[in-house]
Image (cartoon, rainbow, N blue to C red; front, side, top):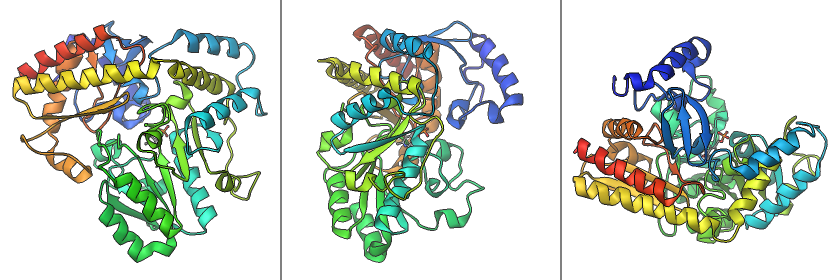
Length: 438
Ligand SMILES: *Cc1c(COP(=O)(O)O)cnc(C)c1O
């Protein structure tokens, strides 16, 4: 595909050519390679507030925000200052610090289901560890995940794992032995009947159900009424644990995560992205009786050389403090709603069927192949979403200085730094781009 291959991106093209000799596919994480929109990845030079500048000097309003973490925008002054101060005190000790207590306290205060928490370095580590813990606690081997939900790249979870995996057409990655996924059961998202059927066949062996309470790795799919409560009821009755993977939704759809929106009490919660404020952090937490199985309080082993890293803790701490300030979250949520409304109206005006969803500071937009189609799970996402049209829209928006996710099967994010001016500019760009597509 040659869309976007113009001199506007000349320096990015040079850098990408060099990167492809150095890194597999020229990137350190697959979706960055732009395989689903074609063309050359846009190389970033620097970011400030709602914007970043690419290697060719073009400015963009950023709706990827490092795939979610930057809820305050790029280089927020409070985060920069806290990091600058901490860095002069040392970057890692491998011994406990007060900062770890402070972030843990704040997380426990904000996320209703968390009574005790363990910090790790990524979302992948958080889900891996939470599942090991669920298996240790219940002494059962099997887990249920949902098609199109992504929980990081641990072997046992690389089954119908959405976005990056889906885009590359790797339903199961080579290198994952069949034994690693032998205990992973898969159901379609929003399908409680399928979950009931799995419990009917395997109930006493099921350690946990892990779910993205709002799915954000197959585009944005909201849970249907009763789905999350149904999972809570089924798992509780079967003596299995319910794990909310809130790596994306935590502090994003609401300060207390999706569990606070639907008032569900999961046994364990996984966190990542926003909790690190742009530095590498993940966490898993939940009921005290379960968390006390984690070493050294209990027998389940899990460790990390850089876990609880002081720079990461301080960036997370300042980020969470900022979004807790009065009115802050409401502001992001209002801007996100205005953006979603603007996109919907622009699509209607152009006569293009677009399914737009949003919650808190997350949004998603699917180009549908035909009007009247509705995406509620991974099956319908693959069937109804039109990747070519999204690819064209992506480049038309990039040309107008708006950076969207380089795949339709990803969620979009708004930050506290996005003001009304950026939303208006984005909707105007979308109106032009959609008119050109129609
Ligand atoms: C991003 C993500 C992960 C993986 O986190 P990494 O930090 O990339 O390892 C896990 N679960 C969900 C829901 C995510 O969105």
